[in-house]
Amino acid sequence: METFGKVLLVIVTTIISVLIAAWAFQTLWMWFIAPLGLSAISMAHAYGIMLVFSILKISPKDFDTKDKKEAKPFSNYVEKLCIYTLVYLVAVGMGWITMLFM
Image (cartoon, rainbow, N blue to C red):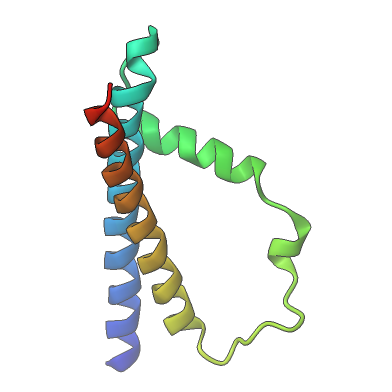
């Protein structure tokens, strides 16, 4: 049962993180790119663009498992996911502050 709870937590936090990331990208696009003449995008488009860029930034070192602590892969994953989600929210906050000066 404990494993099921961990798997469910990973699935739920991943979905929430993806939605927040797509929303943040879409919001920043609407604030800073659309006024330059490009079309507005949906959250699905925002996530698709993010996927394209994430594929482009993959490097061989991402798959290097040497010197990595794999003792707690679950907690490491959830911790990274929370940090990335926080980064998206901070980016939107900084973008909102920037919008105040436009």
